[in-house]
Image (spheres, rainbow, N blue to C red):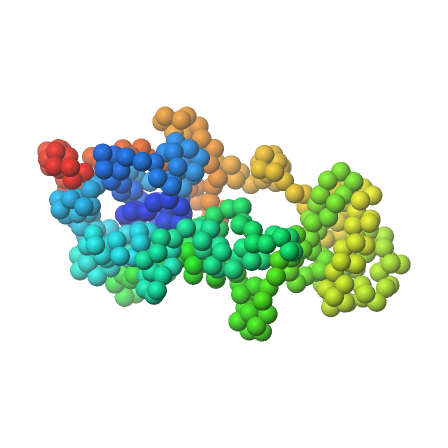
Length: 390
C-alpha cells in the first residue's frame, strides 16, 4: 500500500502541465488511468513529442493506459461509468472543451458527488482570455518572468525550462490533494483549477510583490541576485562559479576566506546597504581575487567557511556529480520496448516509501484490463471497439 493507492485518477491530460500534475499523484501510488483517443482518431504525436522519447516517457510514467473516444456516445458512457467509481479527473483542455464534451464539473458531480475535478488552462476558466490557447512561453512573457531574465539591457529572455507548465501542474496537484483532504470531512468533491498565467505570476513571488507593495518594477539583473549583494556568477582561473553571500556575517566570512580585509575597510563595502549601492565595485573586488585560483579550490574553501558556493554544470556534469549520484535522482525504469530508461525521480523523499516504477504505457495497452475492473467484459469491449467507441 502506497500513500495514494486508495485513489483512482482518470487522466485526460496532454502535453506537459496536466501530465506534470498527474505525475505527482502517480509517483506516490495513485491508480492512474491515462485515457487517450484511439489511434485512428488521434494520428499525430502532438506537442508531447515522440511516445518513446525522453519527454513523453518522463511525464507519463506510473500509469496504465486505455483508449476511449469521448466524442462517441458509447465512449462517453464508458467514461461516465468510470467517473462513478473514481476519485479524481484531471484535464487541461481549453475551458469550453470539457463542457462541449459533457464532462464539466457539474456533469461529473451529478454522477459522483465525491469527484474532484482538476483543470489547468492557459489563462483561467473565465475572463477575456479564457478561450485563448495557452503555451508556456506566452505565460512566461505575460507573467513577467521574461522581463527579469537575462543580462541587463539584453531584452526579455525565455527561461530554459517550461516553468509555467511545470508550476501550473504542481499547483494543480497541491490543490487536488487539498480537495481530497477536505473530502474526508465533507464527503464532497470540488473543482480545483489553475492556469499557466496564474501559476507564473505566483511564481514571481517577491519580484511580483516588489510591484504590488511598493510599485517597483523589477529589472534584469543577469547572473546577480536582484536584491542580495554579493550573489552571482564569478570567473575563476579555470572557469566559472556561483557564490551567494548576502548578510553581514556571510560577508565577513568571504572577506576572511579571500583575504581582502584591508580592501573591505572601504565604506562602500561596510554594510549590506552600501554593498547593494555599490554592486559593481563589490563584485569587481571579489572577481579580482577569485581569478587567482581554480573553481574547485575556491568552492572547497568557501564551503568550508560556510559560504554557499558551487560550480556551474552542463547536464552531463550534473549527473556525474557525487552528491547527485548519492541522492539517486537518475531513476532507472524497465520499459518493455526500450529496455532500461533512466528518468528523473520525484524530488520528495518519504522515508520508508519506495515509489512505483511503472513505465509509460503504450496507447491503449491496458484497455481490456482496466475496463474489466469497471464491469466491461470481453464481449462488451469487442462491441465497443467495433463501434469506434474505444
